[in-house]
Image 1: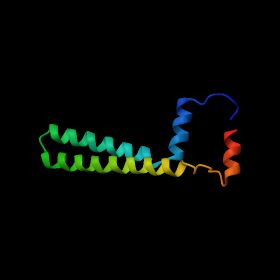
Image 2: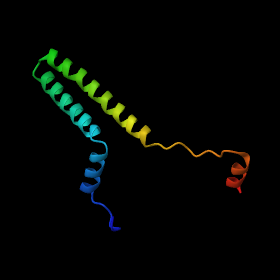
Image 3: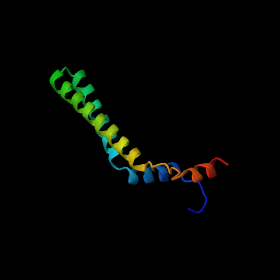
Image 4: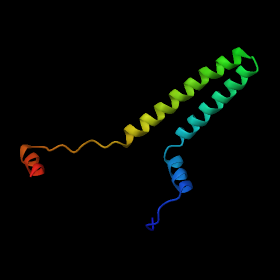
Length: 91
């Protein structure tokens, strides 16, 4: 980068490219929620229940993908191999 702060759209695009399954899961969650609420409003209880179950699955998928992405991004802590390294870090 050239030192200029990235815009909201640039940041959003970068994050979507890094983790493409998260926005897909979020959109699926919203679609199931809106469809389920609409079906409930029209009195179609069977469809509403199915879509709400789909919403729960989509949310679980999104959380799972976010957790996997976060755990893959974590680096193991560099632990001192011996007592000399440990003492060198504290001083």
